[in-house]
Length: 326
Image (cartoon, rainbow, N blue to C red; front, side, top):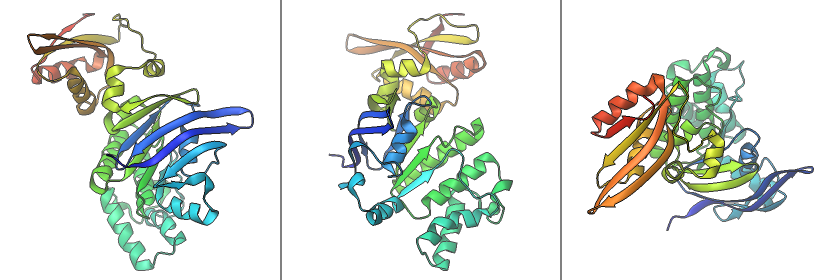
């Protein structure tokens, strides 16, 4: 049985008469990367601030390691926040001071001695591959580099939980990929629980073990990333504007993939999402059993620019396919 580090039950949050979170229920396993996926204004960032105790909830509960956030004394809440690192969309660095000084700030607040701070800075800069930027002012870094510094700062007090609020949304694709790889590595190496709030579906596909889809202040669907993207619940279709039509715009290519094997099609779909850096949309899938051999089919679309990449990948996997709108 997996112990649930973070448990949210019947959470309600209002801003005046605006009901921004409605009956939120989530269980987030220890050591997982958990995505909260939703459009702007859906309530996902507010939920993250509630988990960190930055926002007070109106009713319900948020329990971290058997401790209820909403009933904690100010001193206990402060200690709990030490165990929660935060990564923001806009980096929240002090741009006039150096990279090292930015990383040191939380440790100074908590009274770490100078030697510990210096050693920790060096270790974290090595982790985020920015050792050569130690004495550079934050304002002189690229967006991807600033986010790496922000991640190092979030890790400086060795928290068990990392909250990431749209941390890739202002980055270019290459920087986004590097941040995804960094967060994956942190999760695998240090077993941190990472909660990722984003509107970017590709980030969730590439990074998260589990995903909750939030729509109009409510959690509509929760499951493993494989399950959610394979089953395509209505909430996900609403998020991406998906219809069950196999027609396509001139800029899209529709693939009908036929996969004959003892491996369920969801495994191949998951491989596509995780191994390729192109944007692949799952339109439909179905499977049959014939003489104990599973024949799987699914229909996906990609941009015309990515058509060759997907063709080469499917050929390398010995997977049959045909183009429906060729």
